[in-house]
Image 1 (cartoon, rainbow, N blue to C red):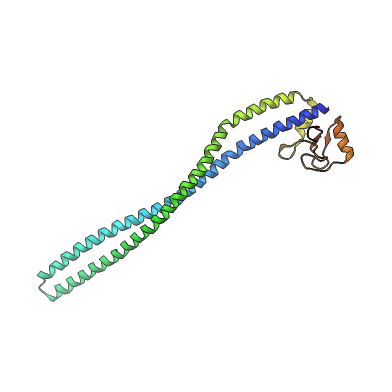
Image 2 (cartoon, rainbow, N blue to C red):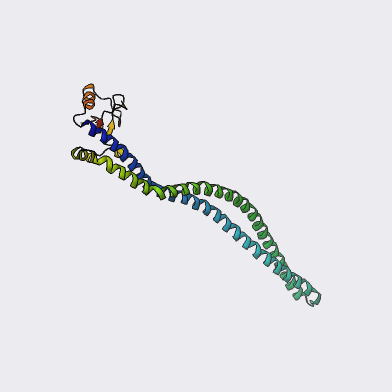
Length: 236
């Protein structure tokens, strides 16, 4: 029985490794998605600024065209003064010229705002571009690392499962079934006594129970957490 309990402890160590691998196999894809979303978020901020810059550039071109068109109209109206023959024509032409000048002034104001906006946005783009490159470098490095580990993880799991089969075959069936029925925290079902305490929950064990665990002629459970107790001379 005592040797079987020690083998259970060995099996527990194998299962802990298997549990960690299985847990990582589930967690890594979620972490990869999270890090990719961080890259996408940084890229989105940069894209929004670039879209704003493009819109301001579009406004700039529109204002420049309108100003050029209005100036051409203004020149044409001013040239017509030389052929005006009546006061009514003069007043009408004067009104048209004032409208042209007002239109030019309005578009020049809009053009100035567009240029100032582009300058401001470009400064933000430069900052966000630097931030984006930094985020992408850091996150992509970790993504590549996780994907590399995922690529070999199933091989590691298969290898550990093979070693588990070898250990399990060396354990008495009844003892193995007792182990399988246990549901410990984070998969811990067996623990070695360490400094007169349970190796799982650190409950200080009474002297009589410690002696029974040392003898190892039957399965002893921790009174606190229910973990199977094992006496390992190398650990006590």
